[in-house]
Length: 147
Image (cartoon, rainbow, N blue to C red; front, side, top):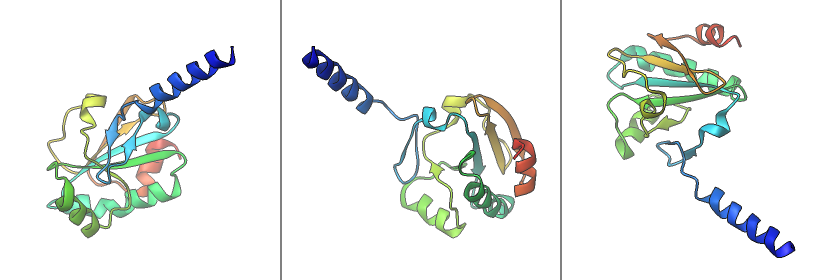
């Protein structure tokens, strides 16, 4: 009986260890959406050639540091940069939130923005909620999320 339980547990553990992440960050961190249930998710599209995007980054940094227990903030580079080029730009804009390299559009099925910055809001149940167009302040985002 104990052998069967151990075998079942071992198989289950192996199965869990093989789960594929939903997203990856530029630092190769694996993101599992199940781990984010109960949190708001913000996905901000930005580019280094977009002054309003750069202006908005400190607000997203503040939101992330003040409300990390309620909100998961991610950046996604509009130009789809990766590797060293992306890391250099993230340092330049002083981003303190993770930058995704996996395309979140494939999960949430929204239209890619035609103007920047834009932030996609995913509710606590993991469903697409709204789009925030243009640079947002901390207070504006807090109002949208009822924080």
